[in-house]
Amino acid sequence: MDAKKIYLTKEGLEELKKERGELVNVKRPDVLERVSQARSLGDLSENAEYVAAREELSFIDGRIDELEELLKQVSIISEDPKNSSHVVKLGSKVTVNVKGKKESFMVVGEWEADPMEKKISHESPLGKALLGKKVGEKVEVEAPAGKIHYAIISVN
Image (tube, rainbow, N blue to C red):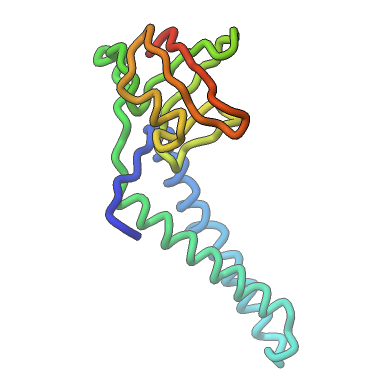
């Protein structure tokens, strides 16, 4: 992985740590036990359970390595309300008017982005367009269906 900063909220960091802990302390030991039991059954060349358990172990180890690399590069997004300005930045909750409807988003790092939860990446077209903008400003985003116009109503 490159040395690119990984931006996360405190909650996002806790989720990654929780996933890593679950993999290291629960899932990996369970799969190691399955590998051990399958190995004790004898002929490994025709042992589907052994092969499946080894593949799962490999996947878990890869995800643990990935999470450990991510955690080394994390930069926490400040969510201090006293520090809140009316400029969109990482961690901002933004309410916009789009096609006559109000929509709210939180601008987060790419690892936390989840459109279903209204969390958009600062690297997405909309996220890039909103960063640095203030209440009252308008942004235009190119979408497959054409240009979409957003008017910023509030920034928290």
